[in-house]
Image 1 (cartoon, rainbow, N blue to C red):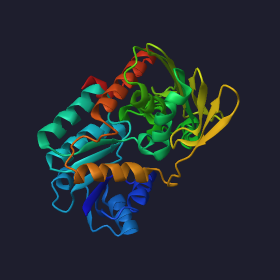
Image 2 (image 1 turned 90 degrees about the vertical axis):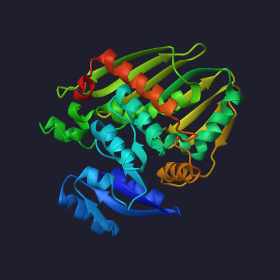
Image 3 (image 1 turned 120 degrees about the horizontal axis):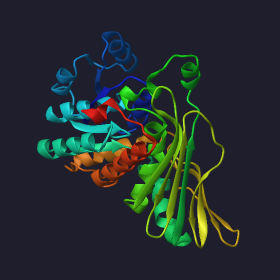
Length: 328
């Protein structure tokens, strides 16, 4: 049984708990929040025994073995390092941290403390993603990667009324690239590795973060286009185009509604039969890494996290988005 603590009490934590609770070796034991009120409220919802408002007390607690971190991105590195130094295995919500320097510090700490550290990118763990990986030869050679994830944020209406909520605050290392664009970029890196060239454009909000944007990349034999937004919706699918056909993906973050459309017009559905809550798979893989004494996950490798944050850093440089975390 792996005793978990959670940092962050928002909807994504609820979703992780729901997915992980389907696993027999998951036990929720503690919660950290900056306020006693939120910690107590969250604890009562899930019948959690231990609550903390001091992150170092939480990190050194002997009532937890592993931690799921869903605090704002600007705090990911600080929280992860504190927990790892407390001997805890850590799974950190995407994006892994604010920039490459923070990600490297997290990886160095995992090596020093000999605990499991994994980025919580669910997409690469779902069964359909494996089917896509195995199907690239069917459509190859691959010439274009088009990832599209545009989702109008429920917080944007408040922003337009003059209330800047967390989703649009540069001090929390947020914005559409970090929150949404990472879903497009991480799978690309997992499939094709480091791109040779990264270019980006974006619409910058007055708060200093991007509301929407596009990242284009070049590989030796293919081009990539990643489109993301928190201020518009999109109804078009994503696509991996090859000379013999295309893999069309309806919902990119979960890799659902996937099919191959061959050059002759014939179609092949790719469906491995997935859990509705796809966070189940990342939780399962993380727990397996702990139980196998692997400090680095075999799917969400540290190299994937480093190459992804390098693309994010370069894209932000291109569009002029700077976080306070970059100046530390």
